Length: 450
Ligand SMILES: [Zn+2]
Image (cartoon, rainbow, N blue to C red; front, side):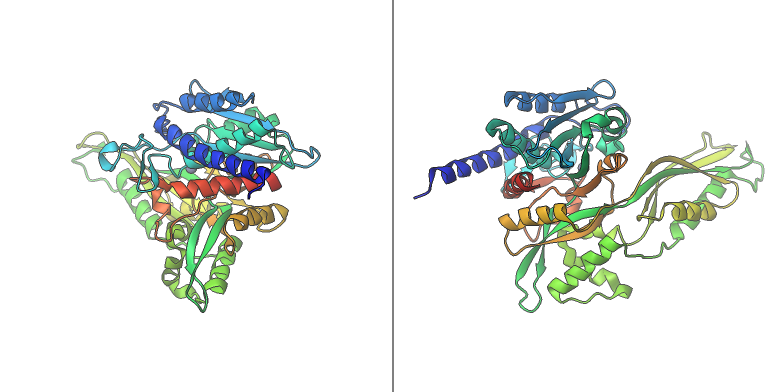
């Protein structure tokens, strides 16, 4: 016979799981598309829904709008030892656009099909929002105190560089994060499945994001001699721009394995017995399964051309021409990368930096990393927690400005054959129901032991 306390524990966990799934679905049904140009619906409706869920259990969250409709929500739960530094658990409320014509289901339906929750935001990151909210409601309902203060935050505008979300809140309301030293959010904590050394038996590893690349969103602008389209012109701005683009695109950025990447690769070799050949790293990467795309972007700096603007009439040579480049650099590479682009662009081409995002590199060991590992192992004994570097950026960049070390830890247990990374911003974005329930349980354990 089960003791009553165990029974009520089980009931509490079942309720957290059920709420995590339901809240994920309900958040997906609220369109919070961020087009990046201020034309979207904003996060107000999603944020008001979050506030409603929190008020229902007696919490009084802080509701903030950086601009009309661009809403973030923050609430602090006091810990039993208030002298200890606090932890921030955060998610973003916006999503990238989804074109319904491309999808198998309505991207804002949140429906469950084949054991998955489908819809925009299912993995990025309304699933984590759902897990966080379910756990936060549990804390409030039961009066449970985490061992230290935990600040829960739901931000606007992550998908457009966080300017109106995490950066705005960190700048205008840093007091909300007073005393906090660590944070968790996307993109990490999900599982990959590896063949175990010797036996070939499947073994799960959860990837903890300890580092992320920085970004520089830049433009290169070529200047030339404007003139009539019938007159020979050897100072054509479009030609100068095209040559600069060609040189930048042809540049081979040297491979360099930063510490988080090296540790990941070495751990995988240790677990699987598969030795990597740095001259043929492409043969090693498939071991990473669903994380392959994220990891393949962290082996070197990269510069992708994304926009082009030049000219206005076929018989007029314009005086300038412009291209946008999305530059992503490893920790420590910012100056070198911009200098290299400047050199490759050549004379007559000016470089304009529109937005910079710092790279992150958090400690890969210590008590908090141990707590995350223990929380995973309690739910998946025999699994491993491995560090990795993310090629993209997250809201943790904004919190780092306040001295807070951010980790990607949105726990999900995934089927071995799920190609996870392409679901982010992808068509038919979806997340396993059981994965969300697992993540909610891991988060509960982490909050109790952090
Ligand atoms: Zn995201």
